[in-house]
Length: 166
Image 1 (cartoon, helix red, strand yellow):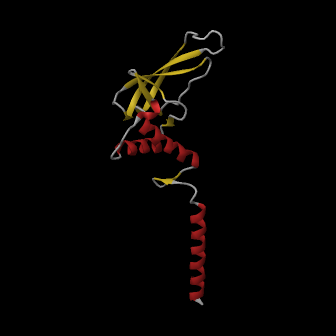
Image 2: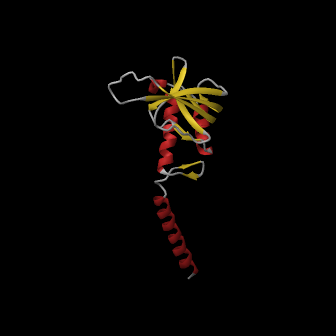
Image 3: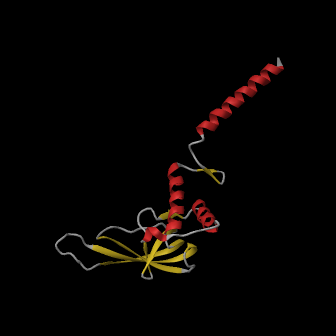
């Protein structure tokens, strides 16, 4: 009698184990942490931007100065603004290590530029000036993203091909 109970218990546990395994396969696990699909895509985006832009860094103390640009086409209604962003760099993942950077963002008039207190950002370098690499190039400065950026930076070989910025 005891053998049957143990056998049924083992079979039940095996079936539950299989059920649990199939229901968990959709969520990736990184460093023993289950992550959602959006975070997984953002982590993939971080690697893509790190390998295809000129600078990626963990930044803070973000100060933005905005000014209107001259209207080069008065026959249309488009007016642009130049946002000059000055920041402190906590860590450089791609590019020349530095403590401070300045980069530029051009938007249509009235578009708000806002950042969290700390972020990871990828930027392009052209004519010795850094500029925003576009949508998707800003990432949360959480421990998960910082660990991922550090892992990518330390991977061998770490090849950067800033094709995205050209």
